[in-house]
Amino acid sequence: MPTKSASKLPPAVVLRAAHRRDTLLRGRRVLPALAAIAALQGCVAVGGTTRSDSPTLGKQLIDLKAALDSGAINETEYQAAKQQLLKQS
Image 1 (cartoon, rainbow, N blue to C red):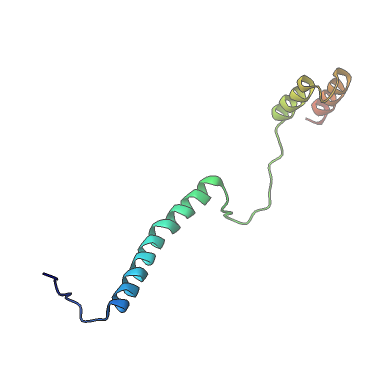
Image 2: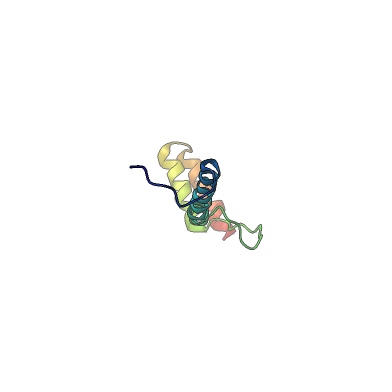
């Protein structure tokens, strides 16, 4: 025996309203999640500063040694660049 719907609205109106409700509820879950992901990845700029930190002397020396070890530069170039970095500090 079929049951009667408690709503007196046409089925098309009920379906549209249900779809809209589901869309709104889904958006409430998705937007905060996207905001959290963006914040964790550092995509959100806060403060509007354009300042960038220069690499430390230690990081520059490590990068220089990595370039020597990979063969990107030779020993002479390594020593010259190392001396230049040490003079600047």
